[in-house]
Image (cartoon, rainbow, N blue to C red):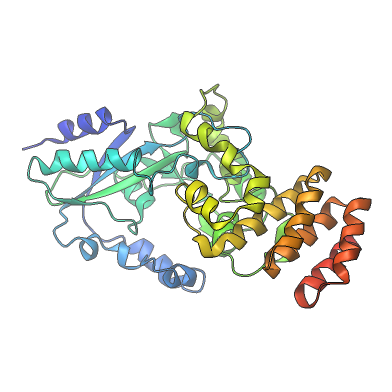
Length: 372
């Protein structure tokens, strides 16, 4: 029978940075949090994410006897500058659709267990960060993320992968505490531009930039547009400012070749004018939280980012987007972006748009003109 040390050795051979073990007991504290914040997490249930059901491992996998948590470091290589600050790093080499990277290594690990008679399941809705802390792999930050105890220079640039297994192993010592130094002065809380972080380890996900970029309904509220800055899909703001991540971010890292290959496909102008075929071939396999029916949200986000860039070079593309789009949310944001950039060319275009617009779009155009 496989020992813990043999399992750890195999996991490391497969490229995982760290491994820990914990028992199959329910995550009662997480369940209580979800129940007490039902309004804040209602969107997750609407999207089919059974977060409450995921707090009991045996509810997911009745044969579960232990949980093995694998730690993947997703920021081992640098990402193209054109993508940094616009797309969350954890998505820049995401293979959950293509299944040619991390997914394959998880499968290989489970095959290794299976060869010794251990059945397993790797669920998406179990609280992975909490499982990692319970397995002794890290401590929590005030930003709700988990920071590794040993891997990636103890940074938060890790993905815990919980594997429920049908054999019992001795659990490791939990590390459930917060690990932020007192001298950091709540840097992440202060730096969150949309006020999503409500206090130490307390978040309103509905105000998080990540949520707003791929789940927000309707046109982004006016008061959120400037604070969301240059983020198109996801956000790393609270990680970028965190002192606990400074050691990792100070390194000179080689560029991730997989991300470099696709970086041109994520050019802002291409995203703003993409059609369904381009989206499904170039974009969706890598960033899949939005389907082809949500291309409008991609274009709305890109329009906002162009506006926040304050770069007049984007004015012709925003004008084109307004004229070619049939979606009022895209047209409204394109108008806002023109007003944010300003200048005579933007002003003239908005004046022309005012004569052909109505309803919500007309109000956006009027407000954009007032900005100028």
